[in-house]
Length: 149
Image (cartoon, rainbow, N blue to C red):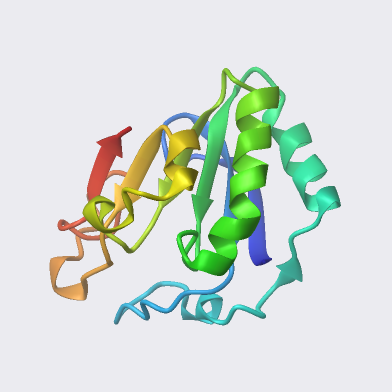
């Protein structure tokens, strides 16, 4: 898996101050996507053990509420394969931190994914340009849902 960015003090992608990981690769190709460069699975840098260590270190301060995983598309099979052991590790080493995951898929379509066992909040649904609403907290269009898991 590749990733295209890490924000170590993000307040836009979930409650509180968060560390956000932006993964590469997406087959949804939503019209109006704000990061179409992330559709390419080869965009960015390889996600390595050093990347994991960097994120875990950034998550440790008490004022960081948790981790947000965005894309690209975290629920692409290639990305789930890499994210599953990482989210297990975050959950094990930092159980007081919550995990938000953003996906263009609906919960009903991905409910069987083992990745969701380690996610506290799911923001689901494709970005729909006709339903774009810049005033919504933590999502881009009205069809998207914030779901406590």
